[in-house]
Image 1 (cartoon, rainbow, N blue to C red):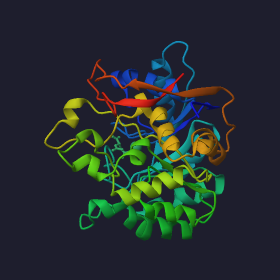
Image 2: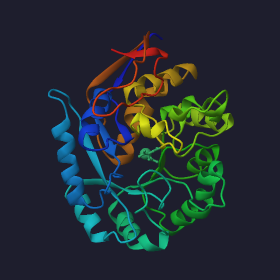
Image 3: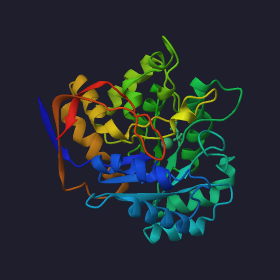
Image 4: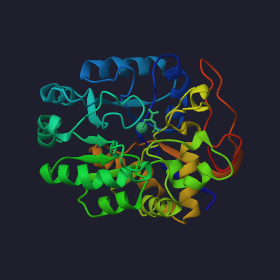
Length: 342
Ligand code: NCD
Ligand code: ZN
């Protein structure tokens, strides 16, 4: 196959940041995706519907003329989130979902949740009204090795949580292990997972062999190749519980090229082109539309997009750093990519 036309996809996990960086990165996401779930880990975090509404307005104000893009907003769960406020935000249409960061698991997560016991009131209400919980699934226990933090989270936190709230709609975000694939496969369709393009394309050897590559450093950290293979198999299987979420997470280049560099990969400039390459390599292009454009809307109870996009097998080169208020290095900078958007 040399070209593929699918319904316009959505990105179910995006960091758009704020202010000047928002204006700088937003067009890359809006070029590819009709809708996106917007992460709330700003400084300070977006913790309620009023803040989410204001952030949505800033995103729409930053959207270039003529681009068609709908931000779907989330609230950042804290130990003191008011369940009634979440419910009101969901019912008014401002909030699409709630984001759970275990406190200190990743960038700007210090105000996250310290224990499931603190959020039981929220989980009960969310389960009752069908409001999805989006989870950064890693334990923060310092005694747990960073490469094991996702698997331990399943066992210690997520398994027990789902036993207590069996009807809760959950997205386990940016999964990185075969453990998470197996966990999802054993569960009903209201428990789903997103998978990033970079976790499909790279493993820890790409990050660490022959020099340390800070632009491949993200959280959850890329794992060994066997996990990467399990993710590729799950994503390309057509199974409705797996769908697209880039976790595009731009940082100024100085924050990446540092003795203590930030986690996050800026994939937005070539996300769809990277995903379709994986589906092509796995001989699974027939399942690309399900992963990119159908499974996510089905999970969220939204219609799939009516517009279509076409990708074709034509080599192009990913450009250099994006210059503007900040210098931001795109994923796969300088590489030739075999698939292009038409
Ligand atoms: C994200 C960020 O920079 O905000 N970083 C990342 O490595 N993915 C936070 C997150 O999603 O963990
Ligand atoms: Zn993220």
